[in-house]
Length: 78
Image (cartoon, rainbow, N blue to C red):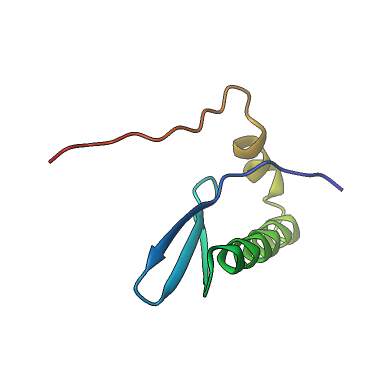
């Protein structure tokens, strides 16, 4: 079993919390930030299982295991 280190972005909306994994474009939600994260983990797991079933996991793994990945935040003023 392989373990992947992924990014979760979580934000509050009017009706709850949204979570997104930017590496895969997978999103989920929940009533709390913790629930949104747990739901995202489940959604990502299902996404990866499906990629494996379809024979696409190697392509996905390249993006997840690339050396030199950088996660940062920045601001833009309008």
